[in-house]
Image (cartoon, rainbow, N blue to C red; front, side, top):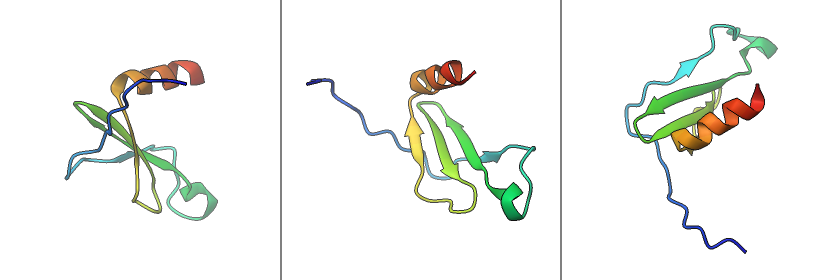
Length: 69
């Protein structure tokens, strides 16, 4: 059993969200996620349903990108 303390990470109000330029605007092509960057967090959310979002530390986000390439 892990005894690690996990900090709750949230995105600041007014965060600018970005969607891939490869995403379409309608139909199945409109299915996309948006990403936002803040000093202590990287947020991910559904582009069609903008709440709630997932937030990760930059370290965890880098590990995810490295593993997914």
